Image (tube, rainbow, N blue to C red):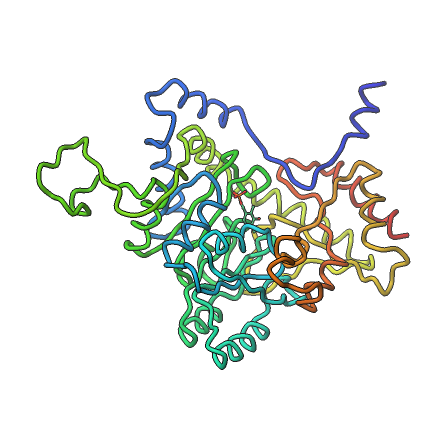
Amino acid sequence: MKKILKKSNKFIPYSTQDISKNDIKEVIKVLNSAYLTQGPEVLNFENSIKKYNKCKFATAMNSATSALHAACAALGVGKGDIVWTSSITFVASANCAVYLGAKVDFIDIDPSTNNLSLSHLEKKLIKAKKNSKLPKVIIPVHLSGLPCDMEKIYKLSKKYNFKIIEDASHALGAKYKLGLVGNCKYSDITVFSFHPVKIITSAEGGMAVTNSEKLDMKLKLFRGHGITRDPSHMKNKKNIYEWNYDQISIGYNYRMSDMHAALGLSQLKKINKFKKNREQIANLYDTQLKNLPVELPSKEIFKKSSLHLYIIKLKLDYIRFSKNDIMQSLRDDGILVNFHYMPVYHHEFYKHLGFKKNYCKEAEKYNKSAISMPIYPSLTRKDQNRVINSLKKALS
Ligand SMILES: *Cc1c(COP(=O)(O)O)cnc(C)c1O
């Protein structure tokens, strides 16, 4: 009896990893092998991601944050440069530019997708051109796994001469037009995260993919202290033995270990099953929540979300409660709903850089209405029904 009670009251997180026996076996194999840190499994993982996304080069790192830092550095971001990203994203999409001494600015969102707004972006570019303050790099974020309209952003990049890093931390497996996010057809570099809540996990980990050999070399140097072992990249080519190496630029230790790579690789093999699970969960929400005073996620025709998050937005004009009341009510039922994300410029650190509270109008509205509902491959129908009933109760 006690056990049943405990089970029915268990907490339901907004997301969690799905680790199989085989995942564990693959990690243990590495522990019994000759390499623990970056070795053959990292190469295998990189090659598998390249094949999956249909891009030419991939660099695995210890997090997406590291990969974003490396991507900005590879594109030459430094002091005096300007980098723009979406106002609604995880802080890492902005911090990567701050690490390099650049100035960050934020683009308001389009309430129909919650991604950066193209009309806002274009207006901002026209104004920036007049003031000679055009960004060097723009970092579109595929929030919740729904791709931004990359073809349009790419066209603007040619007109206004900026580079593009896609923050695809949510979007492994997401479709855009005929390809997958990460084919880098409309960007210079795309970054994925393998944090446990994301589409697949390597515990900690990230990857930067590109179709440019030159950028790939820079990403790999940045990952490994700026050190090369390739004699053709060394200045002094005399007396080079295989144990020689030379540091030719500044870099960090952003390597992924072979244990992490083995886990990521094993997880990648299950991505289609994970995607199907997420689709089933989203479909049930779509049908069960459609008569509630909430806005459901967008289903734009050229874009197929990886469904990392299922974000609902409360129609506050039809509800007697605030978002915090609703979230607290669900949490009291053991449903650990969450919020992704408050506008980056609301954070204390960015306020100190001079951003004011109401900087982006749509981001402010989003802040007051958006809630992330639980969605992860192992969420059972029974638990999801608990979530749905708890939300209905909170809204009544
Ligand atoms: C998770 C996430 C990151 C950072 O990923 P890590 O692998 O944890 O460093 C960056 N950007 C976005 C949008 C994210 O969701």
